[in-house]
Image (spheres, rainbow, N blue to C red):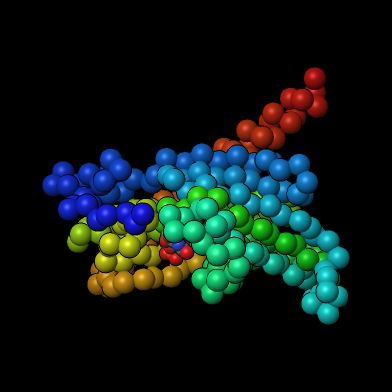
Length: 246
Ligand code: UDP
């Protein structure tokens, strides 16, 4: 059943429907190394989004004609499970999934030292188990951790989140209803280390001034997410080190 639009998405005290402030991220939970059979993996919950990422590689590229002589071929598949959204989604890849696979790969590639592994492929699979807006961003955040968990050398981690405009106000990390009913959505990915933006898209319309503010808001959100990414990776490897020492 389709979600009904409530009368107001933001009340007079600037509190959003789910209780968040305008510049607040959804509650997040991240885990790394969640799958036994992948070289690297990670899982994220961001609000109601639940997304799994798995990485295989670097391994010999197949089919061989796709191998690149001076670097690894980074591939990415973003897929939504049929049960991930309110209205059952066909399991066949949609145009949207093909587009998102491309933008996620392009957001991650600048962070990976692909030149270290010529003629190989690094395959990243993103499975959206439950979607509630902003899945491309959460997919980038979790895939970046899965790449790190696979031990692939990276310049930095990539974190992503959207900012946008809802009922005339700029907000961070839009959920599904804010995305659908709002005036603008601006997903952005940010790479730590070089402070570079590796994805910037926009749906809807913003003034030039709002655009600048939304970009800054999204970068701040990414920095918070990056903090959580680092903590999660550290916690895992401290635990592994302690196990080895015991
Ligand atoms: N969505 C859906 N069915 C679909 C595709 C998307 O219900 O087939 C919902 C889902 O909650 C998704 C949201 O629409 O997160 C926004 O989709 P969009 O294409 O803007 O990408 P996203 O914001 O997830 O990166």
